[in-house]
Length: 446
Image 1 (cartoon, rainbow, N blue to C red):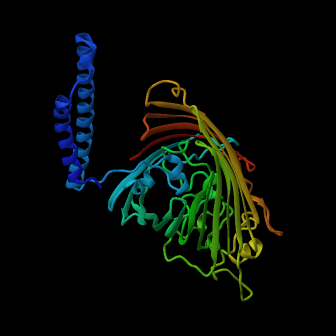
Image 2 (spheres, one colour):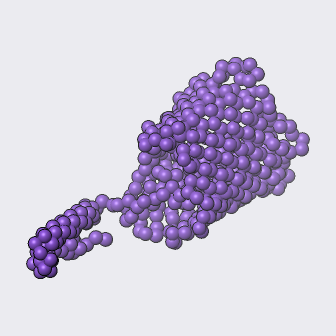
Image 3 (cartoon, one colour):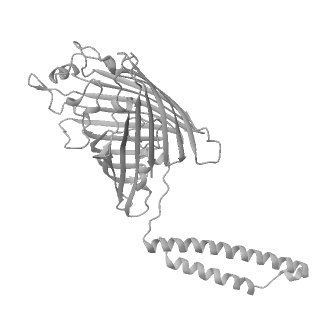
């Protein structure tokens, strides 16, 4: 904390220094008039420089004192790498920038236009109506209690009328390398679930793999630890498990409990490890494992555990205007056949024993080598997802769930916090019912 006495001391020093310099004896007169004049000019220049430097410091100190007096709170720098260690996108990490006790706010939002091709790949019509949806409006609210305890939350309004809590937790900051966290947590898998602000990822829509196998935005109630050791970052949580009674042939997305009266007869572990050899480049893996039965799926008097395991590997590189990302995820569900029968699912659309998907994506900011805040980034994504990769005996695969998505688009950022993303998707599947679509996304963060 800057003290008033410090300012007074510097002020006194600034006023007495010139007088002291003027009263000091000059030894340069022994060298003659020219030497004396040169020495005098040098002394005057030195004094002027010292006074100017003292004035500059005094102005800085005065500004800080005024800031403290008025109750304003300075912000701490928080790098993208530090935010990633915390499992938070830039705006979501706003609370961590506070240097002292107090409230902080941030947010983001996005609107999506979807226009569907009039015919699917088999030539059939009945295209869905063009949709313009304000997908989400978000407010981050946090509070720093002191240098050890912190609260952070994300409140979301979806589709302009549905209110959800995306996360809400307390952190105990043990030290720079270790944090204990408890509350409603983002499951730390994939490249989008924790970092889902529209200004952070390429594409008007989130990848299908990170919606149906890694069901972003995926949050559950629990607690755990996160931290770093050198170039290694990690997160490990214990939460309530998924609700398997809501699994379908489309994946595990329906099984999210979203923190609302969550059933916790079955708990789950989720963890993640990333290695960041240099800033902007990292690679790692995530793992989720836990029961999903929640005592709701019963066969012959036995409650099925529905053990669910989801693993993924990922990599990302953002350097010199390039943004390259890759991810592969696989999920398996125990007792999928028995559960499908107990839930009376169609024989041609069961819960799969194995699901998998992945994508490769690349973009390049064509203005990255120019001195401008504007970014124009063409991008391409190739994705294959199959939520019916292996089905239980006695069932057949729903071929419409085995799809290939090719996306070509461009992202424009007039400033880093505003983005317009437009792309075209070529969508095919094994059932021949894929339908191409054109998307436009308007997003912001603050």
